Length: 310
Image (cartoon, rainbow, N blue to C red; front, top):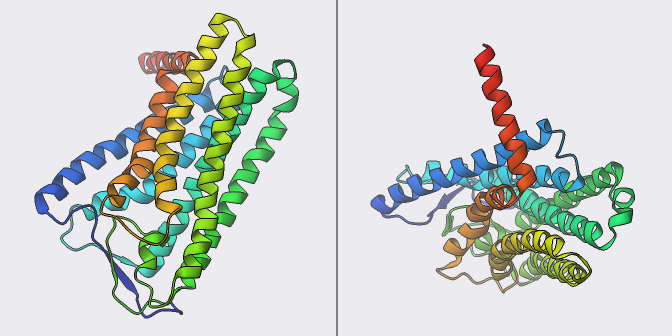
């Protein structure tokens, strides 16, 4: 991995260099990370153990929770440890692994959100044909395509990163490795690489956001033919999904669809989609979903009963 450059170690400046603020960062994001792990663990466990959550929506939600957990772990785990250190360094190989995992699980989450929106479109617009269109086999193939597509996207990011020559400096003004901050360290013209970055990551973010918003417009338009109760439930679900989409895609589009320039606010904006969204997703998909809450209560009661028998 290090054949094209003279840099074997990189220094991450993190969110702050102030010792007191680093302690605040450690406590805050440790709580965020633990909350994310707990929320997504509850969702994945509930879906895998409940017989009532066998519909395609929960199949997709399982994979969304899995991708959110891995996505957050690829960033937060190292960030939390680095907040305790005076000097934070990362090897070039580890940096490339972080770039790959960040884009792999981030892209997977995007594709799963699209599949969830498509699932809701079919359920509301074609209710009589829903079970035929969204069969278990079809859903499995769609999820497999999402995993493969995410892998292709991530490998493209690695290829772009490895094509850059690095000869110093080796200081990244960020709290994780990504192509945008790495472009600033390259000792060559990065214009073409930046165009490829925008056409890859930027296009995925923008096109996916447009597709998702269009799907929700179709859903909301189709609700006019439903009963008042049906409209209320579907509207509640759609609004929750739209909130997730805006919180995730807004920062992503801001970061990945502009020229290779960095702003002081970039690190704070990145917090929204690297740590904020994975934490919010479990809250939105559980607290606003009666079926999931009921399944969680049943799971908790079964656990209490099994503990009493012991």
